[in-house]
Amino acid sequence: MTVTNLEGLDLTALDRHLRSEGVARSGELRAELIAGGRSNLTFRVCDDASAWVLRRPPLHGLTPSAHDMAREYKVVAALAGTAVPVARAVTMSNDDSVLGAPFQMVENVDGLVVRSASELARLGDESVISDSVDALIRVLADLHAVDPEAVGLGDFGKPAGYLERQVRRWGSQWDLVRLPDDPRDDDVKRLHQALADSVPAQSRNSIVHGDYRIDNTILDAQDPTKVLAVLDWELSTLGDPLSDAALMCVYRDPMFNLILSMEAAWSSPQMPSAEDLANRYSVQSGQELAHWDFYMALAYFKAAIIAAGIDFRARQGSEAPGSTSVGAAVAPAIASGLRAIS
Image (cartoon, rainbow, N blue to C red; front, side, top):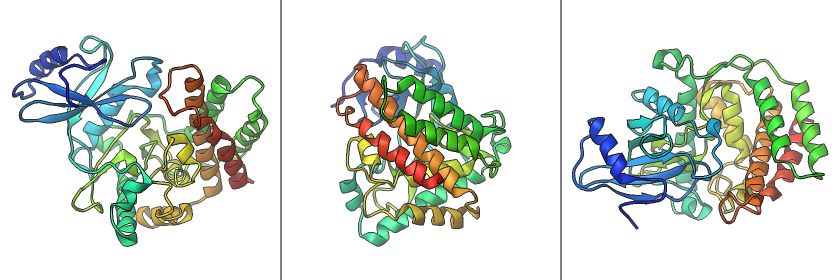
């Protein structure tokens, strides 16, 4: 249902902002909350002539590093005109003067967002799904081929020491979200130490998305082998492209269904295997998968800590209903990480 105001979205204030920014307007603004996503709130905003997508941090439990609207907007604006399909950047505010929180707004892109295994099945037969996967991997390879300096993103992150920082960051995050006397703690610490002891030299430096999978893209409804836009850039930075590719492969694991609390599209049996995804990426990008066991173990570690964080917030009462089962993903993800690196 489309309404004139929603919690966290003052359309009167937004209208004033759009007009002050010179954004063409026609008629009254209307909005609806778009389903999906546990981090930022995402709204579809429209008037009589145009439609946009607005993202802002959640109303409660703000963590600024995870909800940096300026970074998300900057990378989308920078990638316009590259081989990476993105929605056109429209406007942003990096303070709370308009909506009580920072926000960013892009043009709406009509198409398919495939979240569930049943939605994936409706795309077509095995060959259509395989071709769609090839298109998605081609876009990821294209992203990793973009020269950050050439698009104004040379200062978008600190690529030197990226892998070491990832290992430290997710290890520190575990200490914040673990249970008292957590029975998983020994295995988490073992994987963390194994990663810290085996960090390879970085494969190269590129823009990384940080959360790449089918449901963070929009596909063409008439031809799902075409990617119209890549979404959800909140974790993007400069880093090691193989970390991006490995996380994409880890999302193929059925344990990811526990994290999303649904039968997810990317972990569907109709999808190519994680090994196949990795090989396709290597072919499309021309990059060897050196030290791949480390990258897969790191990706499993990251997925496990993300799941633990969602579970922690659910126990604190600040997470969406249906999130209480997410903690069950932590142990299998850590076990898979230990197998990968052993």
